[in-house]
Length: 171
Image (cartoon, rainbow, N blue to C red; front, side, top):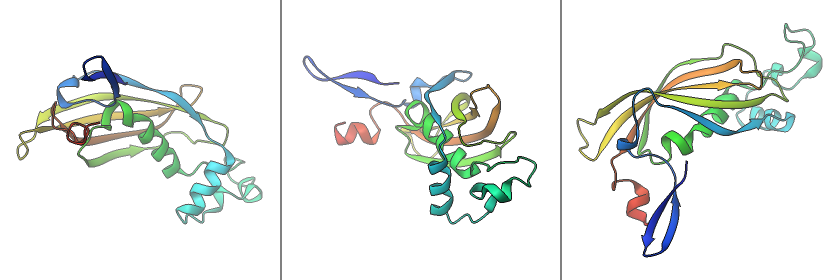
């Protein structure tokens, strides 16, 4: 969701993210492009996070599970879905304040392509920071068949126009 911002007469720079004033309750942002999960993604993430459950990387073990094949590590799915939402909902965020209601209603497998969307649930002024407010969104991750594979609610401290780090750093 880049916007062109004039930084000098006739000179423009792309600006990503939203200020508090740019959010409206009920708006839904579709996060694109999608991301196809590879075996390497799943194996490396599983090893990097020290998750030793064989359901993520041992094909012979997985043949005996109800899925019959390796599952993508759920925290990899969470990371990708959250990452997909950044340019639309949290690029200018001062801080993530909380995550709740994280659910994984369907499995993700290597070769699945993930897409995401976020709906704005609530917006309010910050009581302690007059230059910011709190935005709460519900983000859903869907696979290539439009099956919801992840759902979570996230609250973020979002700056008002002119008060983002981007503004102060000259970005």
